[in-house]
Image (cartoon, rainbow, N blue to C red; front, side, top):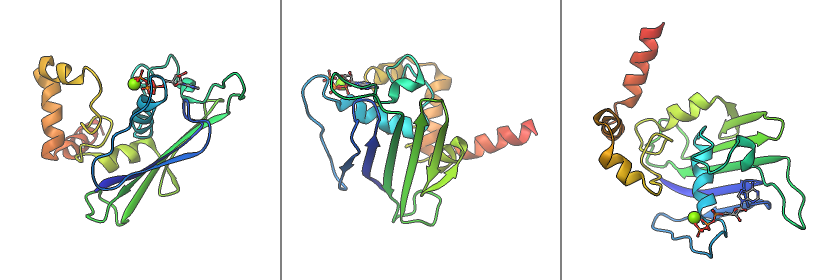
Length: 180
Ligand code: ATP
Ligand code: MG
C-alpha cells in the first residue's frame, strides 16, 4: 500500500484544484517559507478525520477553507482527497485503489466519502485501524511529536504499540460491545 495522490481544492492556500502525484518511493516537498509545504501535511491529517483545529494550525475548522488573497476572493468550501494503492489489500476492502474524500462548507456542513460513496467519519477511521495510517497512527510525525512519544505517559505509548500490533480494531469493538 502506498499514497498515490493527494488532491486539494479550496484547502488552505490551495485555491485552485491541484493534484500531487506520488510514486512508490520517497518524495520531498521543498519550497520557500509560507509556500504551503506544511499545508500538504495538514491536508492529509484533515482528510483522515482530524478534528483538532490546533493540530491544523487554525482557530476554527472553517480556517481550512481558502480565505482569499489580495486579488482572489475567498472560496465557499474545502475539499481534500487522498488515493492509496491497495493492490496488496492491506486495507480491508476489495478495491485495488481507495480514495478518501472530506469536504467542508462555510455553513459548517461537511461530508466524508470512500470511493465516492458518502460515509461516516467512523467508517474512515475503521478503514485505517491497525494500518498506522489513521489520525491516531504514526504515518504523520509532526514537529515535536517524537519528544512527546519519548516523554509521554506509558498508556499513550501503549496506543502506538497497539496500532503497530494490529489490535486496535479489536479493542474498539470490545469497548463498543461493553457499552451496549
Ligand atoms: P515554512 O517553511 O515556514 O514551514 P510552509 O511552506 O510550511 O512554510 P505553510 O505553513 O504550509 O508554509 O503555509 C502557510 C501559508 O498558507 C501562509 O501564507 C498562509 O497565509 C496560508 N494559508 C493558511 N490557511 C489559509 C487559508 N485558509 N486561506 C488562504 N491561505 C491560507
Ligand atoms: Mg512548514
